[in-house]
Length: 125
Image (cartoon, rainbow, N blue to C red):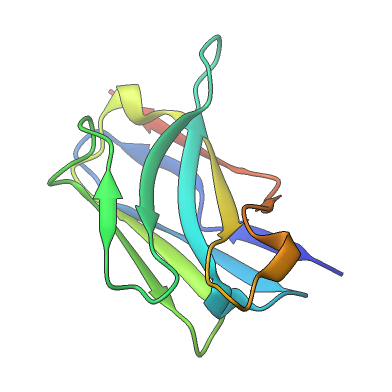
């Protein structure tokens, strides 16, 4: 059974830090690029940060560059999002996403996605 379980959400004051974790199970984690998305109330879901299957490359939304760091531990099947200098506009539900990108391992599942249920981050001003 495929599972992505986010943890580490909560309430933090502006300027503070939090670390989200996403524990994966039920699929070959090492074949998947991992991403964090977020959705604020009344807004569309947006990509926050992504890391390739091997961990060698990352990319970030302009709004979080220099403040957030995505990392992964393939031995623990876990991806992290370290969030620093948080702002009220970072308030959102944060979702973990896995996309199968490694070939030939992914085979016919190339491009398939799995989603977590989300973790709420609230940044107070």
